[in-house]
Image 1 (cartoon, helix red, strand yellow):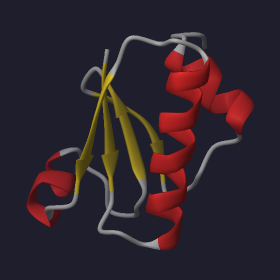
Image 2 (tube, rainbow, N blue to C red):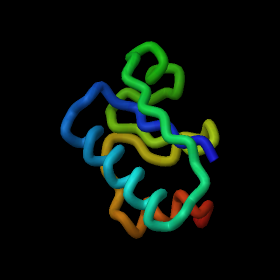
Image 3 (cartoon, helix red, strand yellow):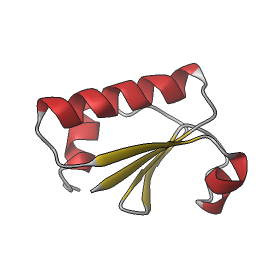
Image 4 (cartoon, rainbow, N blue to C red):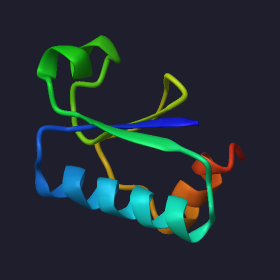
Length: 79
């Protein structure tokens, strides 16, 4: 699984990255986590409000930090 955190370094972006890393570690999820800060790359995903969360090239969250329960569900591929 490849996870991308889209954001320029705002507080929400940093919080999302921290939460995702914690959940991946705590649940032994096999994932590569990348932080994307370049605005041109972020805009390619259609994200105009950060943070954005991309899992395997699919945008799953824009403009907010999902709850830990929601993040775990997204990372496990649940709907």
